[in-house]
Structure formats: structure tokens, C-alpha cells
Image (cartoon, rainbow, N blue to C red; front, side, top):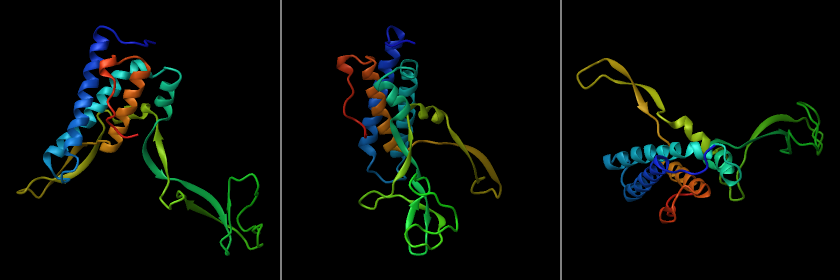
Length: 208
């Protein structure tokens, strides 16, 4: 497995990195515009393509790299997917017991350890100490591969003068905050691999 880039490899790395930086700066310049602003939509599209290109340029060098790079490849939190749910047993008095706990061995209808009322299974949506919802996260830079050329089939009107509909493939993009976060992780992975010259070191552009 190659661990450094030279010749054409270095040129491709440098180009992808610079284009990704430019896309990030462009997005930051338009992100506060209205949602239907054409320049904002174009900047989002450019950001998505540039971040994915930066990621793809790095894959040969980071996919099997050990240490910190492996942590980024497999575990870096990218975007929230689903609410964090805990399966619990609950009685009529509201006593809760985690169903996966080693301290409590219960089944539906069995008596609650605290009050002897029967318990029933429920699911509890977890929150942090301030009441904000917690989520299961998609983790690892490797998850970006699924977003290369990702589309979704949609049915749209045939046009102003047509009563028919047609099916089109609509590009799917990651949210800008996710893209900025992923780009910064890519920067860190590239730095760990020594793929960026000192003058090219990643600027603090992105959200972790």
C-alpha cells in the first residue's frame, strides 16, 4: 500500500486539495443566502463534488493506513442518522429498567423490581443533560464512498403545457455542514500521511 504521493500522484493530491479548499471558501461566502438562491445551490453542488473528489484522491493512501488515519477511516463521526433509542421495561408507576442491563432479568408481564406491578416493553429516545436529542452517527470516512454519483428517482410534472409526468434521476448531496466536516477529516488524514507539503497544510476551514 502506498503511503506517500509523488509525480502524478502528488499533483492529483495537490489539485484535489486546492479545489476542495476553494469550494469551501465559496460555500462560506454564500451560505447565509436564501435557500432558493441559485449561486448558493451551485456552491453546494460544487462543495459536494469537490469534497468527494478530495476523498477519492486520498483513498489509495488512507484506506489501509494504521493508527490515527485508521480511526478517521473507520470512526470519524460524519452525520447523524437515527435517534438514539434504548429499549426498556416500564411499569404503570413509571419505573424504568434497561432491557440490556445485566442487573435486571425481566420479561413482559413480570413484576417490577421496585413495586411489583407488571412491566411492559417500551423504547426511550435518549437526550443529553440539556434535553437535546441524541443520535446514532454514521462514522468513518469510508462512508463517503456511497455518495459518489448518488441519485434518487423522482416523478415530476411534464411541464406547464403537459398533463403527463416523467421520471428523472435527481442528484443526492450531503448537507453542507457534513461536507465541511468530512473535508476537514480528509485534511487531517492527508496530513497524517504526509501528503501535503508544509505550504499546503490545511487551513482551519471546516467543522468538527
